[in-house]
Amino acid sequence: MLLVPFLILAAFLFSTGIYGVLTRKDPVLLLMSLEVMLTGINLNFVAFASRYKSSAGDIFSLFVIAVSAIEVGVGLALVLALRKKKNSVQINELDSMRG
Image (cartoon, one colour):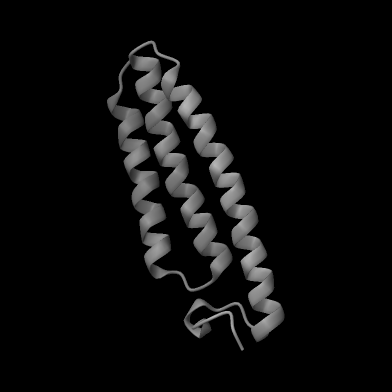
């Protein structure tokens, strides 16, 4: 199995995610960009696990998926708290969660 096409796709996904994180001001789009970055990382883990006939990359990929699910839950909870407190969800208007 060729490893290079998977690594190129993973690098593209990770780069797209970094671009989204650096340019977006909406927290939901920011979380989506983080998920795209984690998808690129997972693709690397699975590609290398398949190449070297190991299950360690698959298992680690499952842990990354679990952490990303938790990250989305906490992130959306923070977005809802921000919306309730400030009546806006723009990141540039966020200086603190107090007052």
